Image (cartoon, rainbow, N blue to C red; front, side, top):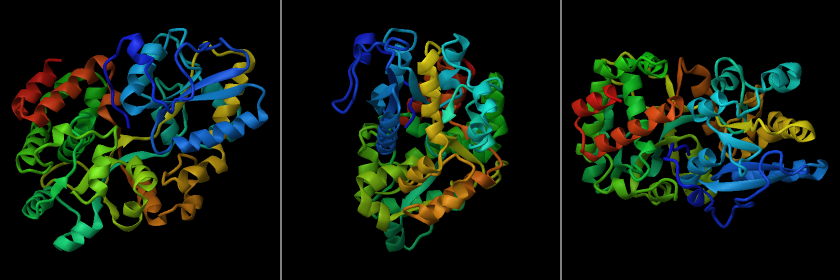
Length: 429
């Protein structure tokens, strides 16, 4: 859902899927007086954005043109386009480090006063979620999807057949690995071709081992925190899981962005899948039988002797719409009206129907509308009760740190770096 990828050449960035609704060479921000170019990450939730664009266009003189960009191209194309004539007017992002460079270059509209001047708009969102996308206390994005904690999904049928329960501790997890290896089932599918999926494992292993405070230090500029004993322990646990066969022998060739990992999981080839909460929506859309009959979920297990709170979360609080600073006048007014749609109860209900948990303050009262209310309540209570919610490391850190970090994590999981070498590499970024 949210890889941070290297910047490609402009020609490569202009390559889009057949489902894309607009092409490179658009008028760009401010270029057309009657159209807003909106870019969104293409996945199982995009149908909601399609629907609400249609609703907006029915009543607006300024029309929204929605461009859907496949996951493997999204971050590259967005970062290449910003500042160019092909930049979108409004675009999907992850807040935090994903837009920090744009804010520093004054490329985004500061929406703080807009939210404050319209309490019905500004107060519609859970404050902690709205603030999670802020930079230096200023809001450059408006929530546009559901909350996205990372969840340990599992196949209930496979667990029942093996007579096991989801893991409550790391020891339990290693025991499950042994159980499913013996049954010739991959214990946990891992999309190693997209190494940001490996990051999720390391994030939780560190959070459970040493608490959220260690990455908070790193995010706030204290790179010496990479040398904390908990980082080494987390890296070693990751290595031990790989060597125990937790992810099978071919995980480096499995992709998430092409739905490979999710399909492998849904077909009963793997017992578990650690993934963002959007995995439920993806399965509901692409593998509805599996989602309705076999898919189950749990929190990531505690670590014996660890100081982290087992109720803490990692992931992405949500996704955001941001507005290009070149949008002005009537187009800016229309852009704000488009953003306000995402604070409505209709939009919240559409998210819930798709398996997502909205970021609006009235979400709890709507949860019974969810396709699987027990999943909706599970996720809502996770977020509500979490003592901390650590933003995914690759989104919290600037690109000059996150890119080599992802490279080092990939090398850790592939056996090219030992746990000690990983720590040394991170200290020397």
